[in-house]
Length: 486
Image (cartoon, rainbow, N blue to C red; front, side, top):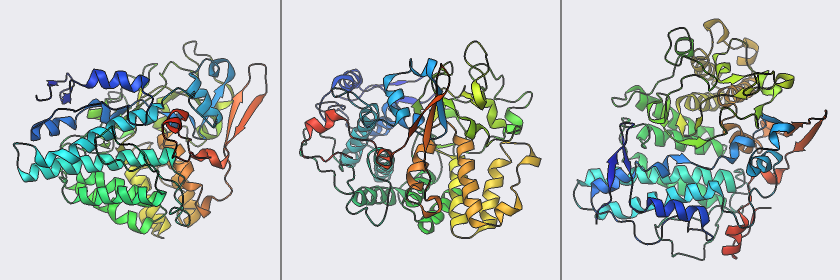
């Protein structure tokens, strides 16, 4: 029996395998480590079946979104915060446990569902009927690249920030390589083993992936190169990361497939621009498969634009120049009354689904950071200004020469630019993690401030242990051999 497919209204194929309803039902009520994915056999036989499986919504749209609420760019007002989902409140407070003892993690069930599909493709496509060996190799490479992406997220939720001095002893995430839910007795292994696994998958994938981007939701060679570079930078190794970022740019410069380019906010948000009109739900931002900045399009669910629960704090809003077009994605008023938010807070009004794969602005900023760390301050500044010139008027894009001439100041400025580019989109949490073991950011502390209705504030301080999420109690109960994070 073959899988069943339909043509989706958005114009690209979506695999609606017969198990999908069962999978989603099980994901909502499962109690064991791998029962978030379907029991039994997912039936596919041809190369085309496996190719279309790479369009499954489960591998590019995630329910997990804890990182949106844990960065130090967020704040909250008590009268709205107390009505936010319980998990959102726990994330904001950096609680030890984000879920009740009988609850599965949104992050874990989303990522394990995607991982099951990638493992199935990687393990079976070589024996599929039809297609050429080259097609099979390319599909397998996409699955390996996608699996590495899933592990990058998993290790940034449940693994310690990478420190080469301790990575061989720190617990990692179990290495799951087979689409088999009957496997048990998992071992977490070490953090180093998890990183080595991602590097191996991506190195293998890069050799077989197409250089051209055929579809923004599919893995390509530049996407895999960019992801591998990001992994190396998260390991504190800019010397290995930079050539991969440069290779990704070279492939994108020669790209003959789907266009990948920066939006010029000076044009798309100006009169007659394609991002207009700017409504109460933000600019008319393109949907996932049509976003020209997406190299590897993935998205997270977020609080709606009409939510007042999680806001941008005043120290983050103060980082923006008043003429920065990125402020069009925020408002300084509550929804729907349009009353002003207190103390410089702002509310994100778009996009409703957060792009959280690999986007072109991330590539520019990561390459700039690598260059600065390797003392190419001129090259770092060029990358930085290239992005800034698309985000603000030309006269505001240059960076103070006193900053660009100083390595440490420039690196700090690049990190601030990352905050401006990705405010309230979850990237900041991952940056806080990796920078916690960076000597240049030694001593940094993080707080969330809750504005109380009766006046005054409550402050929550991030403890080092909570830079890493604890595995859900449900997982620990089903896997007694696991050691949980502190």
